[in-house]
Structure formats: structure tokens, C-alpha cells
Length: 415
Image (cartoon, rainbow, N blue to C red; front, side):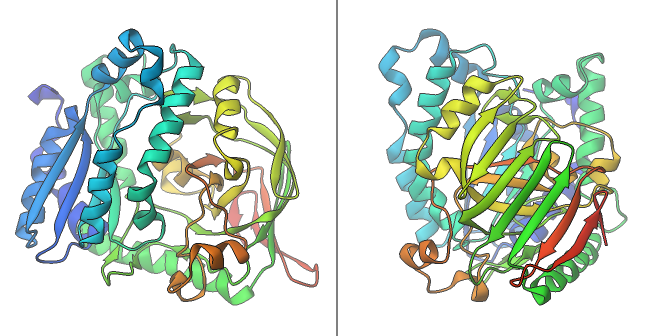
């Protein structure tokens, strides 16, 4: 547990909890809430729980994760243990969402937790967990329910970011960064989020008006053309889930994003930031696509884990998301590498391997079956992994159906 001296002042923590419930979730009176969190995040869990009940929640249920317990599995578990996952737990979560529950995740994992563990065991455990989690994941990726993610400054995460500082100072720095990125430092954070959502919606509407057939990225080590799914729509900022509740799925968020066509991605691309995936850092990713599929992949660090990820299933080598983020975003301007995709993806344009979001279609994907989505080009997979490809050296163009190109970003900034 974090010592009281490491916690931020209660006012800012209370504001983060208020934003999580009012802006992130848009929680409805009478709704249940299912929350997951690192065990160190108990102070924030309690304040979010208070805010949820003030908003009329009927029940808040929290599931805690513990890094030490996770490591115990790798140190002492039998070989067969790494093909096992709690199907029963995820089936129960899926039932809760079907019954109308909202979902909130608090992130804060140690980004290097599994760096020293057997990559084969890590890959097997991740694959088993992803497959078991699919029933609970589908209501989220299909945007059937209102959901959000916020963060807590755990000591392990803070020390990964600020290794030269004392633990107490590192945690304080990370809290400052979280609050700034999450717009908690504003006089009225909820009103500031309303303004920010308006800006993201304007970007989204402008892209939807152009009806680009593809997006092309060019920069050092990158010349990538991402064909867009048929009847795709760009999304960004707050959106209304199929249950009628308006939420911000990520706190923070700076992106506008849509669904690529799984068979229409060509060229090569290099990552511009490390990817922290399930406790392993993967750095300097470089891949080449043909016919929508990754046919070559390298990394200077974590290459063995990347290779295992790409073997997860057929959809793991194809894209499920493409997102545009200006290089001047607040998270980029901070100059910090968070080793946390929730933050790092909002410093840079990015792509995601794996599962597509069905909401990124005309009409929000309402009424579309999995077969309908596949016919429009949406990818299917048990994974969804974002990694960053944008920077101040990357240009982005929109490509019309007739092949004409229009500038969208120059040197990482909106045109």
C-alpha cells in the first residue's frame, strides 16, 4: 500500500474521481459498476466508489490485481499453469455487462514487471488470458456499454519513469503528469473536458467529411498506406454507447481514430516510442505489410515477445485501428515517456494490431453482425495492441478514392 506521504492532495484525487465518473463513465443512476485496479490504487478506488454512489450507482464491485502475486506464478507455477486463465471470472464480467453494468479500469502496472521472465510463458499466459477475456472484451470493443480507463501513480511505474529520483519524488512527479494530462489542474475539470471534447469532435467531423479511402504516413523508416474499412467513420472524444450513455473511454485522450481495412495495408513503418506490453518493453519495432498482413517484423528489444504476439491468431498480424494525434499534444509536450500505452498513444499518431472497434462505422456499427463487420474489412483478434508511429518528423496524407492525395498533417501537426 502507498504511504500517505506518497498520495496526492485529496482535492486533486477527488477531482480525478469526479472526472472518472462524470466525464469518463457518464454513469447512470441505478447502474452497477465493475472496476479493476492495482492493489496500490485503493485510495483512488475508494474516491471513485464514493463518486459512483453519489451519482446513483446501485453497486460498485472492485477486482484488485497484485504484481507480487503475478510474479509468484512465474517463479513457482508449473509449466501447465501458463495455459490457464479465469474463464469463470470473465464470463461473470460479461454477464454483468449484458445486464447493464459499466466498466472502469485503473491502470498503473509496473511496465517492466515481466521483463526477466521466460518469454514463452509470458506469451502463453497472455494468449490464454486474451482468449478467456473475449466474452468480456466484446461488449467493450462493440461499445455496448459505457466504459473508461484512468490511472494511479504506483511506485513501480513512477520509478520506471524517473529512475534517478527517490521513490517519493518519482511518485509525486508522476502524479503531476497524470493530473496535467487528465486536465485535472483546470479550475473546472469537467467544463475543460467539455471544451476539449468539442475540439476533438471538430477534427472528427472534418475527417468524416473528406471520406478518405486511405491514410498515408511518411517519415524516417516509414512509408505506410493504411486503407480504410468500407463505411468507416472517424471517432474521437466523448461518444454515446449503444446503451445510451455518453462516456470518454480514455482519460486522457487526444486522438481521432477509425478502422482500417484488414486487407488494404501496404508498406513499412517504424515505431517512434517503445511499447510496454504486459510487463515487457518492446523497442524500435519495424514491420512491413503486404496485403494487410505483417510479413516482416523486428525490434531491438523484446523481439521474442513481439514474435509471440504476432503468432497469437490470424488477426494479430493485421490492423484494427489507426489514430491521428498531433505532435503538440500536451502529453507529447511534456517530453515524458510514460511506458504506458494509455498515455504514450496520446503523444503520437498510432496503429493497433488486432481487434477492430465496431463503433467506427456509419451509424456507430449498430445492427452489424461480426460477419457484416468482416465484410466491410474490420479485423478480428483476441488482442488489441496500440503502438506509436507518429512524431514531429512524420507527414500524413489522406488518399481519395481516385488516388488524389491531400495533406492532413505536416511534421506531426494538423494542416
